[in-house]
Amino acid sequence: MMRRTTYLLATLLLCIAGVVHADSDQERRLAISISIFPRIVAVDVDLEKKLVQDNIRLLLIYRDHAENAQSAASLLMSKVSNIAGRKVIVEPISLETLESGEAQAFSGALLVEPLSRNELEKVIQLTSDKGLLLFSPYEGDVESGVIASIFVGAKIQPYFNITTIKKSGIRLKPAIMGVSKLYE
Image (cartoon, rainbow, N blue to C red):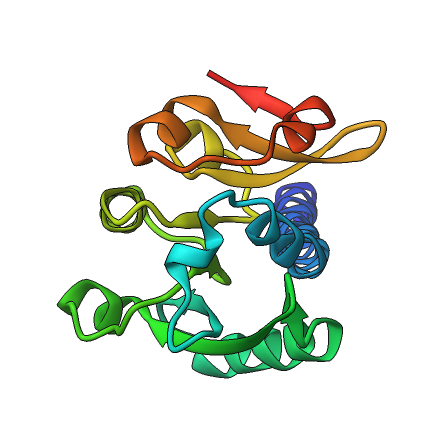
């Protein structure tokens, strides 16, 4: 009985440690992505056509945790005030508001929370149909159709889904593709 209890406790602790580790990996990926996302938006050849009242409006999409999205928005604003000489406006937005169509025009979007497969497909479709860049820091999202992310290997690189880029009509400056990891 004691051996079984010890085994179950050890298994539980490993599971908890795995969740904590996963969360810290996701938090690190989000922090890195907040630094890279504006640079990716800047290499959109058609960025001028995606201005909102002469500004670059970036959405930070969340499902449940508005406070995390607000923290991410504050961090992003502390890192960048303009892109390509244009003022940057950062707005956290709930997935529900985005899906309802209430969201006003925007220049690009960053996921600040992992989404379910169904939710992710809806956001990919919505942004792709509008020819807008969707960036996600979460592993597997580029393979699921998100346009951009980060690839963490020997070095951190931008990571692009070529199929979704073509489907959405987004044109990125060629130089970025030469230093990026590509998924087809």
